[in-house]
Length: 219
Image 1 (tube, rainbow, N blue to C red):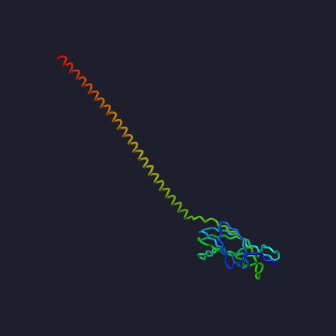
Image 2 (cartoon, one colour):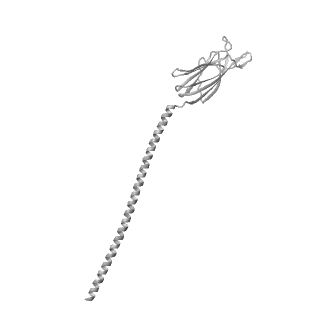
Image 3 (cartoon, rainbow, N blue to C red):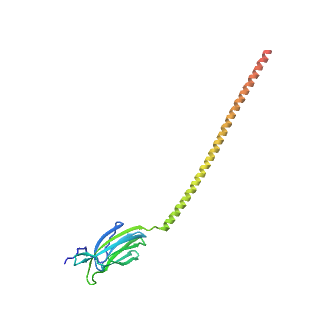
């Protein structure tokens, strides 16, 4: 009588760390045997699992579906010992849970019955686990938005200060330009007045000299 080939049985737990977000594998176990896997999860991470169990048929010499085959799924937080999931389902089922704390989580599957309660049944179990994204942290997002709003208000206040400073500098520049133009205009008029005084002085001196020489000729 042929028996299926399977890896050596583990008495309690087979440790396996999933390296990807989606993991598909299959393994073998006997009736009432438990297989466990370790998954390190962040806080508030959604995990979905799909399993499908086939039972070895001595008559057909292959693994077949058995509607009487049931699978027990248990998920525990290793650090706290808190039981997250404990559910019993059919041979083809799904389970979903959300991690409450970050750390290692034990995902265990076992078969609690088979075609007979008095014989050992060999089972091939397919397991697909998908680790989803973490849940949005509403409080963190709200505080982050508030912090961004405060930063934006501070930035707007600084921009207003910069605008006021620029406006003040433009006003000072305009006042300085007006003062410079006024000073230049006064300097021009002062120069013209000096030229006028010099011309008048020269004319008066020339007239005085001419009268002086005319008086000398008469004498």
